[in-house]
Image (cartoon, rainbow, N blue to C red):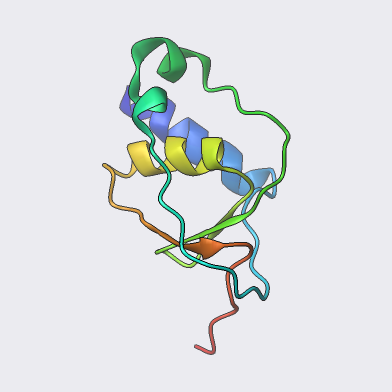
Length: 91
């Protein structure tokens, strides 16, 4: 199971699913309980629908499905900051 989580995160990172830019839309709550079910975990299939979400790790996820799989892989430690792309940090 840990190998599949690591592979999924590596896949998302190398395929360009993470990106940052500007946005100022409102906060959203995404229920990820569907993606925690065994059959959904085995499939790891998300649509190509783009509806960006900015998470608490300042990473933009392309849609709620990708966000939920990453949130589950990170032991549910992510929260949605707002809909849309994340703001670039000035670090």
